[in-house]
Length: 246
Image 1: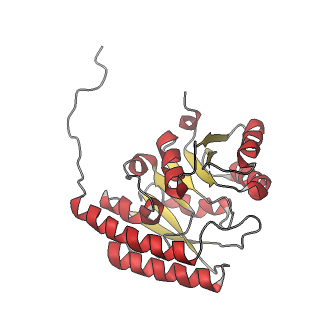
Image 2: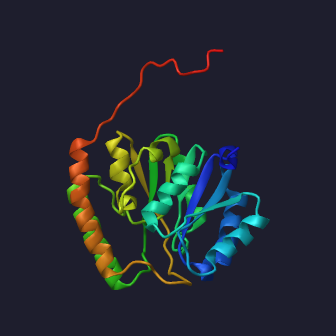
């Protein structure tokens, strides 16, 4: 049995060379699970780390009953890691938070009240503690993406999100997918709620993004999304006889 089916919310934590953050992650996530308003678990997705992240993940999961992990054979990027986690989980809701802890696990409590009225609930980082260059490049990328997709998401780069798992599974996998979660949910005629959340400085490890990959990737991906949007097909099944009749 997939043990994530025993939980209401499965929080995905993609990991790529985050050994300096692992024990802090354990402390923060364990603290949140103890106070969560829903029955929640953690799923680490090791994205081909080349440091000691995987051995630390095994250690942490070994002493925490509500912590699970899967490890990809090689690095597939944030979109690949998230899609792998989405495909594996069997909880009704799937959440996402970055390993850098620049957003707080406790702020899932700000998102959860809207889960039954929206397909996706996402954070908007307030009082951002990033560098000027990072903030400027993020604003440029977000503004261009909004014009291209029409999704109205103010801060698609915020890693604090929850989605209905059945809707998340329908999202197609491609490089840069994570930048388009709101737009891809809306393509399914789902609804998105945006909620202000806290933001903190990175305390350990190094960012995997810089000025150029924060702008050039999203720029090219937006054209790919526009192509897909014009050809996207929604369907609903209104009758079937697949249920076991015997």
